[in-house]
Structure formats: structure tokens, C-alpha cells
Image (cartoon, rainbow, N blue to C red; front, side, top):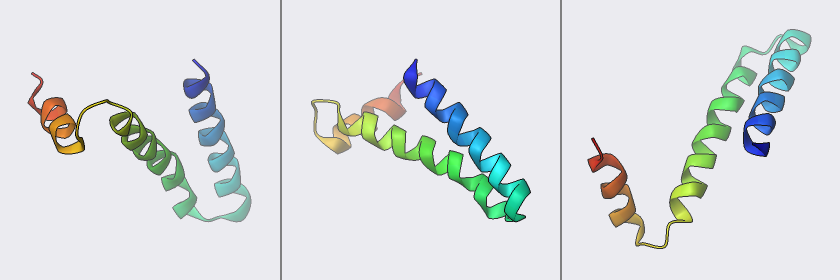
Length: 60
């Protein structure tokens, strides 16, 4: 639950910063945060990395 709340906080802060500083590239920050979270979760699986990646993408 705290992960979801932190993603919402990051998203709200980046929207506010984008409006304040007029830098639309700041809107990419939440996407990079989600991608980083995905890599951390994949790294926490107790299998070799490539086996984990193959397993995740072979799910239907």
C-alpha cells in the first residue's frame, strides 16, 4: 500500500513542479520510478535474472 501512496505522491509532485517550472520533461519522472520499481521487484526474485525475465514474459 505504501508503494501506491508513494507513486501518487511522486506523480502529484511532478505535476506541480511541471506547472511551476514549465518543464514538461518532469512528467517522465513517474514512469522512470515505475520502471525502477519493476527492476527492483525482478531483482528480488530468488532465481537468476534471465530466468526470471523469461518466466515473467512467458506468462499468458
